[in-house]
Image (tube, rainbow, N blue to C red; front, side, top):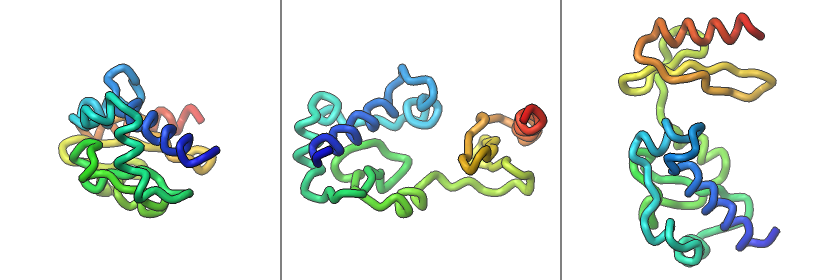
Length: 138
């Protein structure tokens, strides 16, 4: 795969994540107002020209500020470990697999070394209950 194909894949993934039509990503991007600038939505070539100068093999597309969308001044290429550090901060609740993020609770479970988000809940009790149900089903 050449650099153009790799960058096109990153562009396509970015567009897909921010789409209102992709249910899996919708709560994390579209519903939070994370958008892609018009010139990048309309043209892969614009994205390619803006992002190629700093691209290197093995780097991933990242937003400098997770509360803002995808546009030239907010995007960069980073290593996978750097990208993991730039995730939204969850605070521990003291309950295994339940985290607080602003005014919601996120329930997660790790299966075969992969962490999966079960859902987002208004109360800690709802999150704990959902996680426990999944845990019992395994």
